[in-house]
Image (cartoon, rainbow, N blue to C red):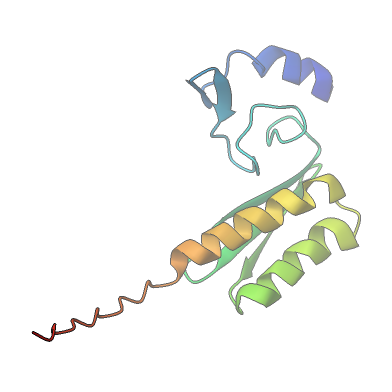
Length: 127
């Protein structure tokens, strides 16, 4: 079945749809942006890029046809982003999703770092 036909079937009725305040979002796996669009859909496209959180880092998933590959990237923020760019843009896999994949990977890495609480200094007022 062609991707266009599949998209026309699941576009308005899918179990992954979330409708809120006039926008339609999607929670399907391998959907980078979260939008309900043909470009970012993880079910109907032949080449798919997905980023999800891992134990310490992110897991980058690529699918082309029936072959699915997963890479665990946990060597630090800059190396992770460089690897995501290399997989998406460098190999001409899905260069249109490169920016969205980098944004999602950096957001996931930012959420995994522990927030440092700084102690507030209290000053005594002079009378």
